[in-house]
Image (cartoon, rainbow, N blue to C red):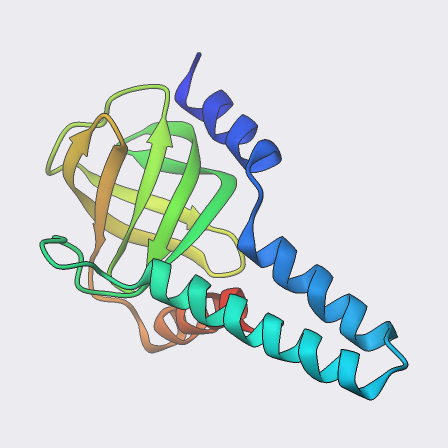
Length: 156
């Protein structure tokens, strides 16, 4: 199965903490009993903390920035080639993308990040997990849009 197809399957099958958190918050908004509302709000807060902790860099990680898991289907340009890819995770410093073709290490790319725009980067490694991209210096506008996109992931 191709990398993008795998990403689409995972995105639709995996129980996602974000979806669970939103459902708990929806139930909290509908609850009429104050004790129940308080309990549901506490559960939602715990789930939010779990999401944040699971996304923080772990000891031994190459990545030093908080990452936001994603399964957005997008595209990137590597030279003149436009490649469809799945954005697996995103951070202020870079991204992990899954493509059906191998992108050479040190290739200069432009990645279309949904809600942010096109960001220039360099492929620092390609592994069985995908292509690891480090963003080149961002404009203040792009950095602000990227920070806002990352914050939306944790906004409840």
